[in-house]
Length: 391
Image (cartoon, rainbow, N blue to C red; front, side, top):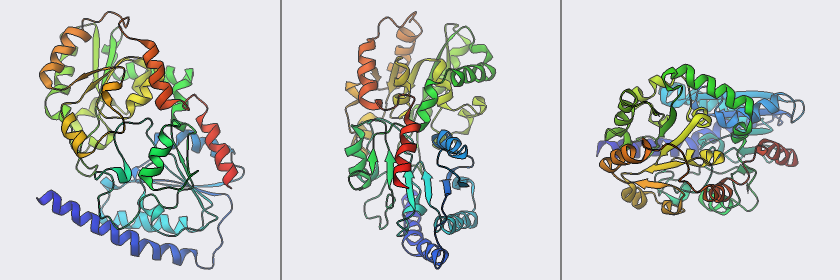
């Protein structure tokens, strides 16, 4: 009951900020001042530094891909900020936004949609996840509660997605006009095709986990259920993650690493301590088996055409409360639904696995082509071309 009250209070505060206060800050900053040609904002309020989803684009822009520009970085992790610091960050963003020519975001970012922006200002949403699985946006209560008065997707000029099948879904879920959502591919996935980046990841993985050398790497990368403000993870709560890590001391063929969704860090901090700054995407080049649930990391992993497993002990409830765009049963993987079966599966199938000969790689190719067809190592080029056409 208390959580519901707090959640409702936060939604009321968001509505007031978006509908009344932030628009007034924008209007005052824009009054009598022209848009600054070449002013480019990169903004996110879930990370204190440049998010992975923006790094390749930002580096290309910094090196002149869009001509002579002035980059304004606006990054903070609101979960670590006081109320006063949160307000100050959003005020500062609105003041910069009022005279920007171009804004890049990579997740929901309420301030960008809180006003009627100038036509000269273009907003690019580098949506961070690929593929189709769990519902999002207006299609689910967990993302945008019913009755929420403001919009979290207004003002977008371009939304980049991983495949053509995502276009109509994202368009509907975000309430966007035709042509805004485009299957350019996801910029950050270009790294997966870089041999230099993969070698760097390999080095960092074995620096963090030297005992994994000579063993096959399995990564458990769970996402969360519920609203992002109050996330829960059954696989961390039911002891599955601890079971996997204990196996590292009893058998020598596999090494298990737990790498949860970053949104779980506040609630489950101990599972992040051993990662030493490694992200799940940095683990993927060395991973021989990915274990996940509803995380879009499985679509990133499909680029490598390697086996994955879904551990979904709350699948029935998740489907009822959030829902899926596609049926996970159709994915080219096994699905395990409870802790006991998971332990049996790991012991009888994974640890006993000496090769990947039992997997149908044609199915992996079809899966990748359906969900991630435009993630081919050239997504950043296509996105920059689309941005140039807008300016």
